[in-house]
Image (cartoon, rainbow, N blue to C red; front, side, top):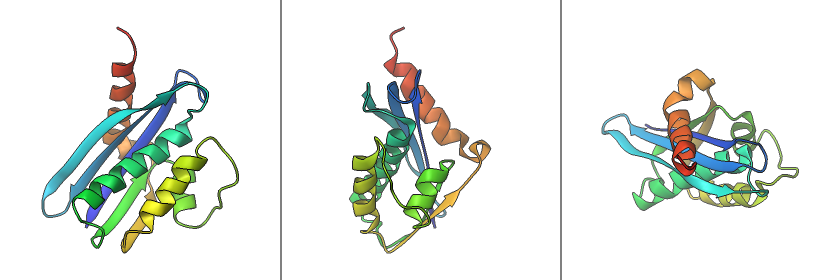
Length: 141
């Protein structure tokens, strides 16, 4: 099984700050497949939800480039919004993250055995650390 941990943040204000993401992808048999962080954007169109969905999209894109869409994949996140929307429990209503949400839905449709699981923040520390590292690197020293 492949386990994907995702996280995103928007600081120093949410919404309207700098949105960053981080993800870690592990395979039971091969160990760490990927570890990545980055900046989604800055300004009024950014929010923590935009960042969380950006992390998901980036991770899914990586898996597609590795042709892993038929693998058993579990995405773990401390975002109840992402987990519940992607699991089909909650509908999208409105928000700055609409575009990223639609992108995630399109990407998820390409996977055969994809599921989502909410985890407490303490179990998502590595992805959280990557998103924080990206934020620190985006700020002038």
